[in-house]
Image (cartoon, rainbow, N blue to C red; front, side, top):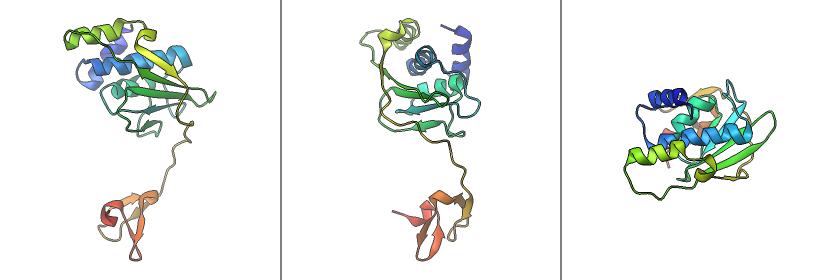
Length: 169
C-alpha cells in the first residue's frame, strides 16, 4: 500500500475510515486491472454508484471530479465504481464484496487497506456505456427569479424561460 497516497486521501477527506479505504483500494484495483492514471482532463471517467467516503479517494487518486464532468454519480447505494479509459474505450466495474468480520472500525479499515484486492472486489463488465465528454452549456437568465442556469436546465412555463426551481414540480 502506498502510505503517502493514503495520507493524502485522509487529508483531503478529513479523517480515516473504512469507507475511504474502500475507495482507495478500488482505485488501486483500477490502476492494476485497467492501467488508469491521474486524469488531468477527461482521460479517465468514473461512474460511482454511491456518494460515500470512498468517492473522495477516487477524486484525489484518479482526478475524476464533478467539475470536469468525468465523475458521474448514479445513486444505486452500492460500493461500486466503473472506470473507463477514453484512449482505449476499456472499462471495468469494481464492486466491493463487503467484509464479514467483527471488530472495530480501525480493524475493518486495516483489513480493507491490507487484504489482497481480489479478496475485496468483484470485477465485472461495465453496466454503462462510456459517457460522452462533458458539455459546456450557455447560461440563461430565469425570467422569474433572475438567476442564471445552464441552458439545458431551462424550461418554458407560460411562455417564460424559467429555471428548474421556478418551474416547480
